[in-house]
Length: 491
Image 1 (cartoon, rainbow, N blue to C red):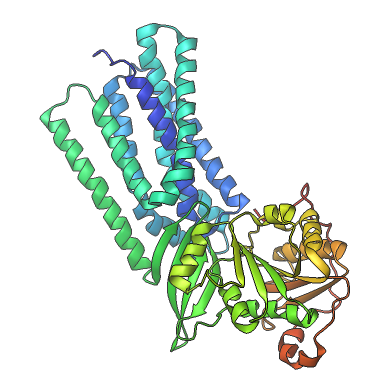
Image 2: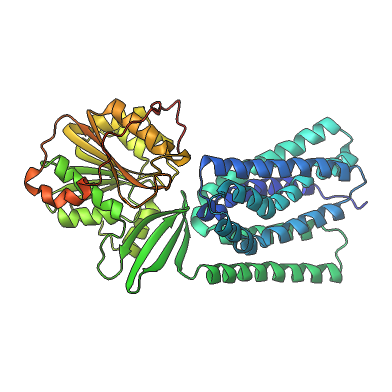
């Protein structure tokens, strides 16, 4: 066997270790618009990849005992490069196809999609370490030392890949470019360690490179053809977003912002008015507290409601806490947000963190940070609501949008949250946004928590009658309150 160059195997396991974790982070971004990013989805992705990696280690070890050489290792990595490069095609063919057919079985979609898109390259990458251990051991004959060294370098590569992808690659260059770059990098790695290069092998490498690039363009074409309504596909530090143009009825066009599977915001392109009916319920703050001037909103998205608020309540002030700075940038560029309005203050930080450490108090707190059935649990708990109550002035109101069912398996969210609000606030009101929905189906619910005894705006009550008439009276929940230690909802 041709002598392996110094550190050649170490560099190989480092890169493959990094690619394993990059692939895991990419998996979550590729799947999130179709199946969401809840804890169950993450569990499915990680579980499938670990199963495939375990099989890779096992098979790789058996192959290593059959006198594998550096050429075989190169070929494994070569195949991995091709497997990664077809992910954009499989996203449309498999993930989108399954999500369309099994819209109610998203965990099954996540498991199957993870297996076909990411399980195979994870399996191939996992075979690299045991083969490298055997090849390195042929030189040094110290099994324990060699195994520990290779495992350590692979793990260091995984750590590097995690931070590099999470903090730099995903928000800066996006998932599709990461997939393309990963395929090319692994191809270069395979070529670099391939022994006795010939004209034939070089031509095959060039053909593979062309194929990787072609697969990328095919993937983009299929995606665009399947989703003609998507204007932009954006990756940020926190999520993957789709900006779409959709038509409702014959003449009404909306520009929308989708984060994961949830439609976060949409506006009428002609009038600029809010498209989501549930947002109008936030105006109830001025009914329940006629003296409300200062408002905090947790969750900006496209800033649809803050824009409405500033237009309707010209003497009021609103602070918006939005964790993702890119979201604010998108709201400026695509949804006409004026960040220079003196009545608007924007804080780019986590909502719970702001509640914990801010010293400002408000007449009204509006919460719109929940993505569909998924919710950051830290904003749903008794401790979080206690912080909300502390941030409210003497007679204040909190209004939260919750997507849930009223009865059945999908009703847990509203049941738990109602019980939690009842444990914190002096009075609680519950409204359903749509009356013609089956109780077992999900829809928007508006939960109102009242602190103290604010003065109701009785003079303008007729303005709010349509909203007030949707109240669910005498609602009862037998669930335990949600705490930081016990949070059976969200992600």
